[in-house]
Length: 223
Image 1 (cartoon, rainbow, N blue to C red):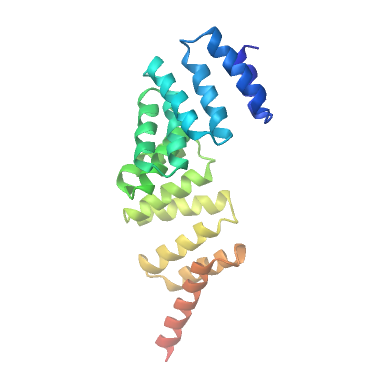
Image 2: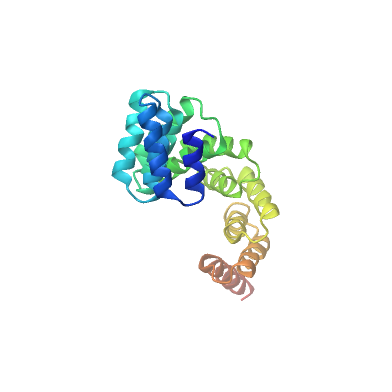
């Protein structure tokens, strides 16, 4: 096992001091190898030393401007500190440099959603779902991007897949209720989904408001 692999194992075990020691040795042995700098940055991020971690990621990029993993790690750091524009740029560079996995596309889409850029986010979230259909979080964010673009038929299709994958997903039921109430103008179906949201998540305030609103409208029509 080489030092980078050993350090990663220490990280997974929560042995951060041991990981730092091993990654330091890896850097000393191969100072031109960006991988050890990325791994060292990941340890620093894990223990909250974000400024130092950023420096190590930048060092890795200085050694290899195509180091996709460095851009991805830096993107996560920026996202977690709510620097969404910088995060989106880093994730874009990670993808452009060959990081073709669902997490990279998901985080890029998530960053763009945080910037209220649903149109730009949508294809990246869609790609994340294509690469990992089991990822309910990615599918839900994809659905939200569809809602922002008023693509309701595909929105409902995605939300129904979510509740099949996760029958306790209160937000998916709530958004189905919103779609049926607002776009399809089907109050009965909307009420059914709002009530289902409350069944799986009794403290879902928005769903409770939806139920109250539909019932009050129904009472008004009857009177």
